[in-house]
Length: 179
Image 1: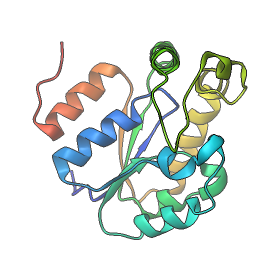
Image 2 (image 1 turned 180 degrees about the horizontal axis):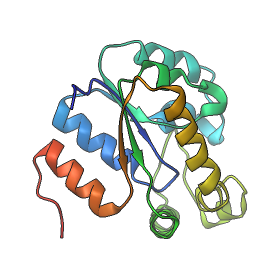
Image 3 (image 1 turned 30 degrees about the horizontal axis):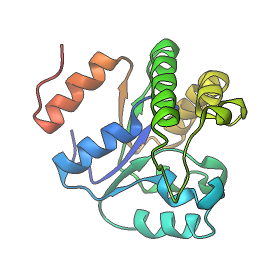
């Protein structure tokens, strides 16, 4: 595999993008940029600096981030990345993860980004990650496959199960995969 200097981690909400980005940042000494933190201002509003912040960090030689916010960014990160890691897990695994994550966030009320916190009341919103992951699962898979076809110069790592993710990550980070 060629060097991974500009890494984009793709997958639907709950696929493990942030977890993998943290691990790769540590193992490969890559600066990590969390798009949710750059995007969400107070009250869940979009920060006006979001696009310019992403343009600035992604012009740099080394980074890892999550693939999202295509409505604002288009294929900017895809054009600048050298590697895409596609976390293409089954819908059942995604839903288990996103529901578990949302329960923990709603119960603990821990701050996510810029004063924002998740509550159970938020689950009624059509854009909530649980509802979004369910309704957009197939569409997001199709869009990712289409982007891969449009960017044939990228190194693509396509991981389809949690076990594949653990084994691949262990090979990069030097950690032992969980059974």
